[in-house]
Amino acid sequence: MLIVRWFLSKRVRHAVDACRQVRKLVRAQRDLLAPEAVGRVEESTRHVGEVLRRGGTGREIDAAMEGLERTVQKNLREYPHPRARENIEVFLVTGAVVLALRTFFVQPMAIPTGSAQPTLWGIQATALEPGEPLPGLLRRWTIDKWWSGISYIHIVAKRDGALTEIGRSRLVMPFVRMQTLTVGGLSYRRFFPSSFESLQVQANSAGVPLALNAFYRAGDDILKLKGVSGDHLFVNRTIYNFRPPRRGEIIVFSSEGLSPPLMPNTHYIKRLVALGGERVQIGDDRHLIINGQRLDAATPGFENVYSFDPKLPPQKDRYSGHVNGTVATRYNRYHPGNFQVFPNAQAVYLVPPRHLLAMGDNTMNSHDGRAWGAVPEDRLVGRASFVFWPITDRFGWGYR
Image (cartoon, rainbow, N blue to C red):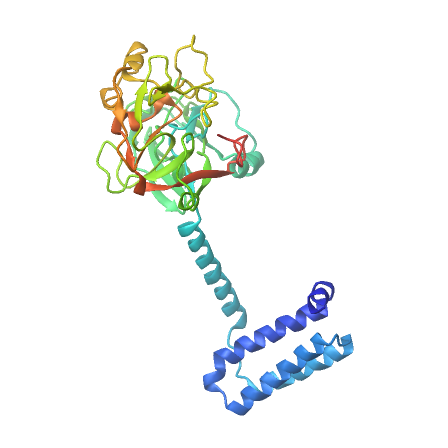
């Protein structure tokens, strides 16, 4: 009955909350108060509770609350800075909950590179055409920036001169970096999100990088770029405590403690293709062969990966299956370090026990298990779960 009244009556909710706060104050001050004072406050608090439990009228509740207020004022010590204390407490509790969730349940992750494209996209930069107008300031700071993760960098030369300095970028505020360019003796500052730090800065629509001594006339675009943040997602850290990883899932693992060619102390996001004890090959038809069985678009988790037209060459940022060293050479994309595990279709790789083999969906632009082989299961962080930003067609659980 009290629960129903709590939902229906603001007076009841206020009384319940007041009793909770009084009990909290008594616990905090018990060692400073006389036992008689504690007893009087507790008795007054119990009286309010009894009135609420027996369904007292509004007048009875108000009278009991007034009595409680008088008792508290006479017997409890002044509570200094109550608003600040409450805010700090809420902040600390919220922080503890967030840290616990991140440590044991879900972990946010931003994708910086394009190795998982087109399933999950990393940071992208596009040079805008000369004369192409930028969206209005309102749109840039609302829909583009906070909804779509798009930022623009536009610097126009104020006078004729050469580019004489490209300064190092530095952090000037949380998540924002600044870099100084000097052209014709004038300094120009560009501000950009910290996540764009790894982008190669481009100067024009042809993709020509900024170069020292390049000459600009007044009114020329020194920089005119559109940058798009990589997908931000939650990683499910608990799922593999209850079941083993499954082929086709997008997993996140740590490189901590692993030897090159992995980048040290970072996280990788790839698609799990083989488990411990399995024998793996990559055919010249761009399909994986696991223990003699060829994977195709009917294999769970690979519906998109193997949806490519075999008559078309493998392409960057397109589903093109999985490429071995022979096929990469055929299309002038061969790099010995990227294919040392799978140089050709005859190469067979045995995944060690308690290890996982993972590869990127962007097979023409992915540094993955074809270069370093399998990684230990104990480096597994979790499974990619939910894209929460930017808001695109990949938002939510819609990708696979």
